[in-house]
Image (cartoon, rainbow, N blue to C red; front, side, top):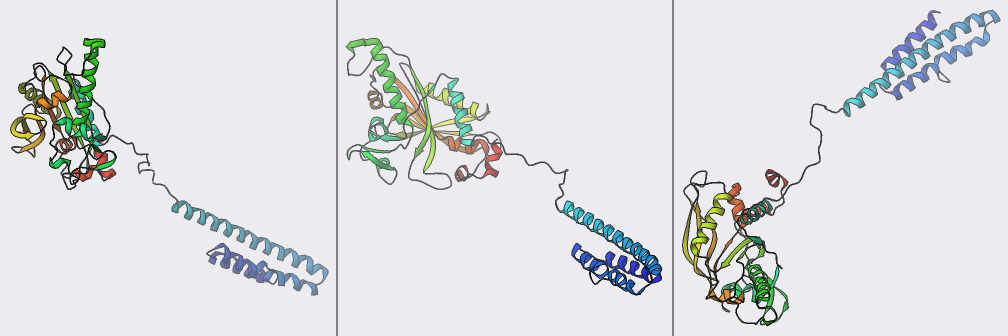
Length: 358
């Protein structure tokens, strides 16, 4: 009996020392395998008498059951240890926030364009749309641009296939062509209403509603640096009527800037300048009275009274109709409004930058 107790104790010690299921199976083979300790003891019963076999066999079976019980207990312990290890490796920290699908938002320049349209819409301006591939006539000639003007050169303008040598097609360099297109259609519509079937091809000098329109959109020029991009946005404005003066231009644009920047103490100045499509012409500068840009003059737009030749190209009589036009860059307005110092950030697509404007 003492021998069997020693075998059982040895088996328990071997099982406890098994660190993995494989080690445990190797230890089992030492005691319960074909050549194991218990098997050898069973084979030794052949030389015993019948009565000794009964008592010896019963004792060996008890020892075998004790070893199997210890084996199963160790198996269960190793399985639980393995499960706990796996659970720890796959544990979730429930104190961390869950992963949520990001919510997109409008690009900052798109927000600026919507804001511009909303402000001018409250003043009675309509929004014009037009093609980005323009003809030379709408982009340059109709706007009184001389044939030898530098803007017509390939150093400044992207020319594309189509058109003719005398009148090529190009990517529009500003959105003023949309103003011309809008005005031409406006004049045709009201000329037909006034003159009916007797409508002529000459300049129209009859009565019609005023032309109030802004033309926001993408434009293209051969230019690229921290403050310029080959593709950028512009918003041109036009107001043509019988008694539209520079005073109206100053009032409209001053009101727009103060509303856009939400600052009633904003100061504007109109510096004399030159544009082929306006006369007189002026650059518009703004000065902030507070904040990081306080005291600095910043150019934001070009403007002026519409040149008589441009009025004629709209189909109107410049002796009766007069107006003003202006052009500004929504990209630059966005930079000023949000304090962005590099235009290229708008085109990098960096989510860290764009997410600030949601």
